Image 1: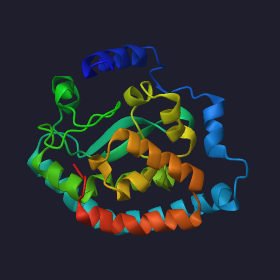
Image 2 (image 1 turned 120 degrees about the horizontal axis):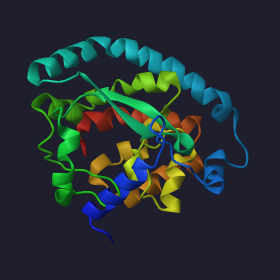
Image 3 (image 1 turned 180 degrees about the vertical axis):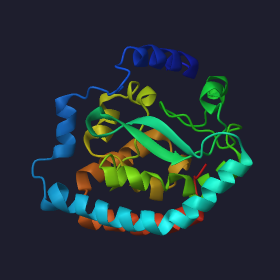
Length: 241
C-alpha cells in the first residue's frame, strides 16, 4: 500500500485535472445500478424525499437558537468564518457544497499534509482523535455533533438525505476501489449505520460494509430505526472527534 504522502500527491494531481466548477467524479453505470435496485419502491421514489423535507425543516427551525449560540462561540473563540464550506461527492459522484459549523482553525487545510503520518484511520480517510487543528469550541461541537446541524440545509436543498452514507471529499473518492464506489450509488446522508455503530472507532472497510448493507436494505422502517438510534448515539459521543 502506498504511504499517505504518496496517495495525497496522486490525489492532488488527479483533482487538478477535474473541472474547477464541479470536481465531480465519474461513476461506472454498473456501480450505480447497486443503488437503483431492481424494484424502486414508492418510498424511494417519493416518500424518502417527503420525510427529508418535512423533518429537516422542523429540525432546522428548532435548532436555530443552538446554531446562533454556537456561531457566537466560534466567533469569540478564533478568527475566521462561522460556517465551513467544502466540496463533497454526492450520488453518482456529483459535487455539491457541504455546510458545517467551523470546528478547525482557519489554516487547517494547509496543515493537513504535515499530519498525514499520524492518521489513525485506514483506507483513504484521514482521522485524528487529537487533531491539533481543532479549536476549543470545535472540539465540544464535534463531541456533540452540533457542527453537523447546517447539513439540514443540504437535506432541504436535496444534496443529501437524512439517512445515507456520509458524503466523502473528492480526494478520498479518487482512491476508492470499485466496491467502495458503491457508497455513491445513493444520496449521501446526515446519519447512517456507521453513525450509530461507533463512527470513527470503526475502520474504513467496516464503514463501507455498513453503508453497502444499508443500500441493499434501505426502507422506511430502516430509516426510522436509524434516525431513532442516532439520538442516543450522539448523546454517547462514542467515536465523535
